[in-house]
Every structure is written in structure tokens, then in C-alpha cells.
Image (cartoon, rainbow, N blue to C red; front, side):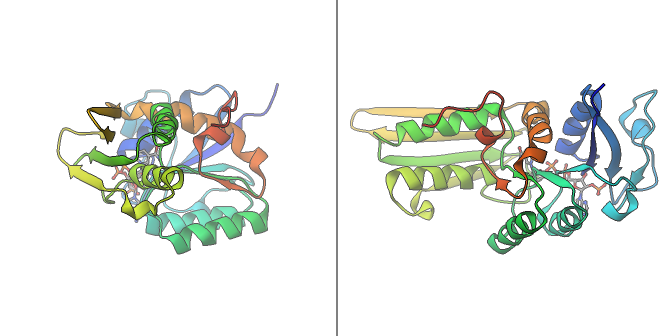
Length: 254
Ligand SMILES: NC(=O)c1ccc[n+]([C@@H]2O[C@H](COP(=O)([O-])OP(=O)(O)OC[C@H]3O[C@@H](n4cnc5c(N)ncnc54)[C@H](OP(=O)(O)O)[C@@H]3O)[C@@H](O)[C@H]2O)c1
């Protein structure tokens, strides 16, 4: 029998981390060996999730996990994530990161550390397949339509603005249109009732195209994260930020 992939999830009590953590827990080829939590450290995740038959103590730090190797999946917030991810990389663990809002310096430092230690890193602003398809469609549309704006909407408690997904979209559009990413207007809405929504609107004489993606619940991110957990070890020394690089089958280049 092949070994299961040991996985530690940081942010496992949060909105996205709990959906992703449940997906990992249910995956037959993965072993959820620990959950990291500040607020709920010392409590049992099975009790918190209301899952009879599950016992998994929550611990506050990477250092509290005894495993020699694990994939650290992180859905938290960027300041604490940077420290946590650095510790995991130092231990030779691979990392799968959904947390958004890292500074350019922290991103560069992570990439450098990953390369130095020869571990794999998937740092992906949006793990939903729909968002990735929307990026590819927008890349294609921007070859022919120059005037474009992005509108993104998220739940009222989202910390960063614009969203990581919208920043990536602006970069993609900027590359194709040969303009700086910050010249692409991005409008952010934060409202209760929203989960994660984005529309990329292209206008031209007498016509418009809208490429829209809506996440109605956070299970939308699970398949992408599972794909990343399965592939990340093979990335040895590389930090990838395009979901297409870890999909099976791999994406055709556009
Ligand atoms: N890449 C993607 O596909 C994707 C999709 C959705 C969301 N996200 C990103 O994922 C992150 C989490 O979003 P969310 O909506 O799930 O947030 P959330 O519900 O507020 O959950 C955040 C979690 O982070 C933990 N946390 C907060 N501050 C911490 C700290 N200082 N140290 C350690 N842990 C801390 C909290 O748990 P404890 O207090 O128990 O530690 C909490 O469970 C955000 O950056 C968001 O943009 C990414």
C-alpha cells in the first residue's frame, strides 16, 4: 500500500481552512495529522467540527507537530503565515498556501527559502478551478479587447482589498495588454451575504463581454488544494503560483 501524505492545516477552524481541512480528512490518500489554531489550541477538532469518531488535538505552532515530514496547508493571515511557513520550509516540509495579502518582500523571501531548502511550494491566490478557467478566458479576451475593468466582491470580514485573485487578474491583463497591472481599474465590494465573486468586464464599440465567477461556498477550493497537496513534493525547490501547473492533466499553454 502506498503511504498516505501527512498534512497539517493552519487555520483549520476558519471559514476556508475548515472546508479544506474536511476535504483533506476525507481524502483516502491523505492523513490529516494536526490542525494549527491559536484560539482553539488544546481543544479537539473532531468536537469542534461535530465529527463523531474524529480525534485530532489542535496545537498552536509548527514546532508542536512531531512528524518528520508533512505538507503544511495554510489559510490564515499573512503576517503569522510568513513565520509559520518559514519554520515549515526550514524543517524540509512542502507548503500549500491559500493565504493572501503577502508583501512582495515576504513573497520573495519565501521563494528564496523554498529554493534554498529544495522543498516545493504552491502559493496560489485562488484554488477554485472556476477562477483559474476565468483567468484563461480573460487572457484570451484581452488579446482582442483593450478596455477592461475588474469588480470583485467578498464577505464583509475579508482583510485584504483588492483580493489576491483580483491582483492576479490585473497582472494577467497587464501582461497581455502590455500595460502596468496597476493601470487596470479594480473595484472592491465588501458586503455581508457575499462569499467570493469576480467579474472581468471588457468593453468595445457596441459590445461588452463579462467573464464572471462566483463562489457560493468554500468547498469550491477543495479540489484545487487536494491537487496541490498531491503535486507539491514534485516541485522541489520551486514556488508556483498558477493552479495550471499543478493540475492533472496539465493545462495546455495559451
Ligand atoms: N487561495 C484561495 O483559494 C483562498 C480562498 C479563500 C480564502 N483565502 C484566503 O485564506 C485566508 C483565510 O480566509 P478565511 O476567510 O478562511 O478567514 P477566517 O475565517 O478568518 O480564518 C482565518 C483563520 O486563521 C487563523 N488565524 C488568524 N490570525 C492568526 C494568527 N495571528 N496566527 C495564526 N492563525 C491565525 C484563525 O484561527 P485561530 O484563531 O484559531 O488560529 C482562523 O481560523 C485569507 O487570507 C483569504 O484571503 C484564499
